[in-house]
Amino acid sequence: MKTQWEHPKTGKKKRCAGALPYGWEQETDDKGQIFYVDHINKRTTYFDPRQAFTIEDLQVKPKRYDGNSTALEILHARDLSDRVVLITGANSGIGFETARSFALHGAHVILACRNQSRASKAVSLIMEEWRKARVEAMTLDLASLRSVREFAEIFKARKLPLHILVCNAAVCTQPWNLTEDGLETTFQICHLGHFHLVQLLQDVLRHSAPARVVVVSSESHRFTDLVDSCGKVELNLLSPPQKKYWSMLAYNRAKLCNILFSSELHRRMSPHGVTCNALHPGNMMYTSIHRSWWLMTLLFTFARPFTKSMRSRAAEASHTRVSIPRAPAVTLQS
Image 1 (tube, helix red, strand yellow):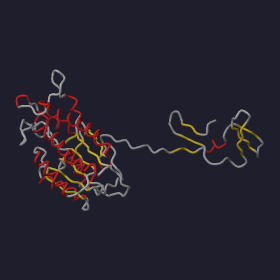
Image 2 (image 1 turned 90 degrees about the horizontal axis):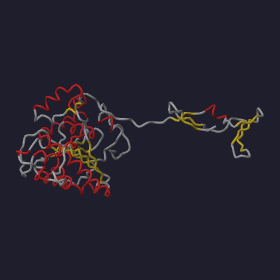
Image 3 (image 1 turned 30 degrees about the vertical axis):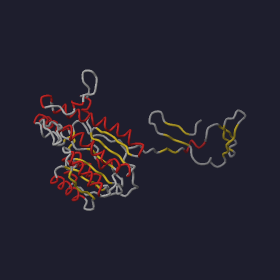
Image 4 (image 1 turned 90 degrees about the vertical axis):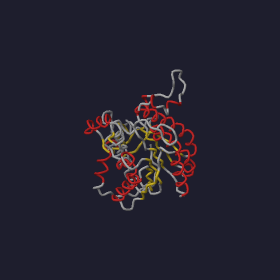
């Protein structure tokens, strides 16, 4: 008989532990098999007497997260007090919830936003939850490459490390418009601005290793491509003229660029201790990103009872007292 086994139905594992009972001795026969001698009752057996006192192995299974999980649950017991986190578009929606969760776990969080009024309000909401939170706002307009460069220069001048960079800001269903750099707005805000920002901060990320870049992309990247009828990459598709522009297609292409960028950035930076991951936040995550198109707003209105809301989650949290746990510092896993 084995001294440990797994139940075929329940999956529970049991094993024999400790010394043999008093009066028992383990021997080996001529064939090399182990048997047990009971000197008190003068008998032998191949059955391990400890099996009458088996103990069950308690396995702690890793918690599984699903659509009902919150950021605070995922970060539970993490101490991020030695981390500096930069999040773009963090004054609302997914960006705000991310900033709030990092800040409530001790990280120094910087909200990089275009609208300073909304960013300051977001900072105040987080500070109301925990007055010791280290959170601040900085001006960053991804629709202006000049603004991106100015932001990077100011950040570098502060001599701060950068452990986590979350490229979250995005726009969707926008009417056709050109930025001051002469590029289509959706493409520049969703992709090119972040691309330029990471390029300017890559030295800081390397010096802060282990560090990571997280790019918020979308499953919609699957519904487009960047090649022409001959199968060659067509860069003109990224910033099309008005007559060839469709807002959803522009968004899909920008998100495809996010995926390609994330993959190549990881290949180049991972040897230096900087990883990069792209994520899909969910098909029906209720945020304000759809506010520019009435049809999308109508769709989300009907789907609202079945969606996960960033706004209500943040509102509920404002009435919740949060305790900050102490635990060894760790690098967040993707």
